[in-house]
Length: 174
Ligand SMILES: [Cu+2]
Image (tube, rainbow, N blue to C red; front, side):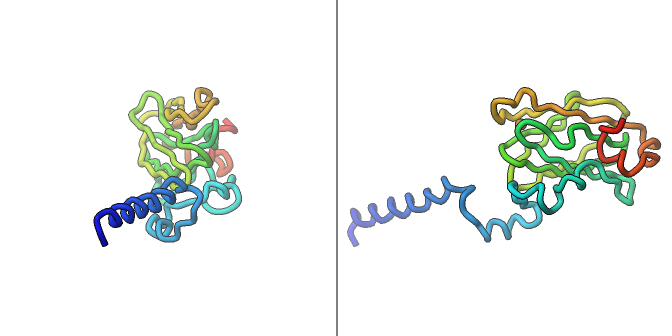
């Protein structure tokens, strides 16, 4: 094989490798899915099955006193729209996107969580004092990006367990 042929071969091989990369979201990748493990979710079926179905979203009390918050970010809202957590306890946030890349930020804090479709973003948060925080999307995600806001309500720690299970999930009832 002479150098010219080798060069043509290498360029062709490179181009053939680049095509699948540009079609990243259109191919099924069993190996990547396997390596990603449990953090992988299908953005198209979030509302149908799995961890992010509607009645599983919001705040859940864990046996050790901490809470887990599950959310979905989508153009142009966060679900649930208003979340409720107790003050001074660890908050495990699990959030995924139904469409574009978003970024959930809690105004007045340093917390910012990048949210990507196809994977679960996890963050450990803690809010020392009761209060209301505005949450906004800080990643330009489309025409309605600037309206993508929601709320976080931090209630006193002893008040939270007294709430009914249905009232803990989000602050719509408050
Ligand atoms: Cu957004």
